[in-house]
Every structure is written in structure tokens, then in C-alpha cells.
Length: 198
Image (cartoon, rainbow, N blue to C red; front, side, top):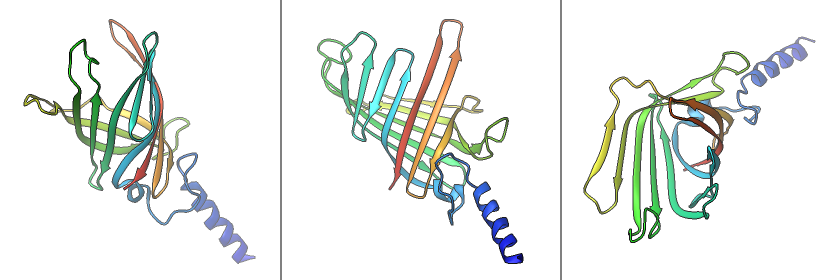
């Protein structure tokens, strides 16, 4: 009888550690241990107001409400370390005439560095079921052009929160939905990102 009660207690404890809806039932690594490392985005589907995007791991397809669909070559990589730092590195190649008639093909490099932390635990969300990305440095450049636009945030206050729908050892999925209000407009964003560990 004691063995059965011990088994039920252990099973209940393990099941309560499952934070994301699609997390593994049992994992020998902590959530931080599973998240730490290099990740490649393999799929994305998201929208900002009337513009939608899909990504298959190499091509980002942009579709604005009334415009033709545009396919952009893209590489999107994320890195998380145990100390709470992250890096997002994105390379996007825009085709000829994308920015106006006569503009050449351009590759934009976007590098974001900042602080990450698990969050959640308020209301209906479980503890560590969300991730906060708080950028403190953003660098934008165009390959072949010497100008680099660097923004450094001394006291970062504008972060992004994603729901960790799935966090396995080699794959993860994020979901999000937000509305941003400003004096000039309302911006609605929603989407899903999927990653594979490198």
C-alpha cells in the first residue's frame, strides 16, 4: 500500500512540473536546461494588423492586405544562456525593387541582445509557462553598406512575453497575442514560432 501511495505522490509531482500544454510529461532536464543553447527557427506564422507572414525555415513570405505576396530569404537564430542572456540573429534578403523601383537586392542583418527570464504564475498561467525577452541592445545593418544603426537601452522597459506552448529538449513552440495602443494607432499582433535545437 505504501508503494502505491509513493508512486501516486511521485507521479503527481512529476505531472505538476509540466508547464507548457505540450511539454513532455517527464524530463530529466530543468526548463532552463532545456531552453539553454542554440535554436534555429523552423516555422513561423504570425500577423501584424493586416500583414501576415509565414516562414518555413528558409523563406519568409510576406502578404499585405491588398499587395502581392513577397518571398524573402531569411535565417533566424536564437541563443539562450544559463545566466539569463539571449541573442537573436536574423538575416533577411530583400529582392530587387522591394524598397522602390531601381533598388538592388539587399540583405539586412538584425542582431538583438538582452535579458531573458521565465514568467507566468499570475491568474490562469502556470509558473515558468511564459518567457520574457527584454532587449538592451539592437543592431541593424545592411550587408555591403558601412552604416550600422545601433540602439542601446540603458534601463530596458519594453519587453515581449511569449507563451511556451512546448519546450522539449530538441524542439519548442511559442505562441503570442498582443494589442499595443498608441496615440496614432492600435497594433494587433499574434502568431506561433517553432524552433529546433542546433
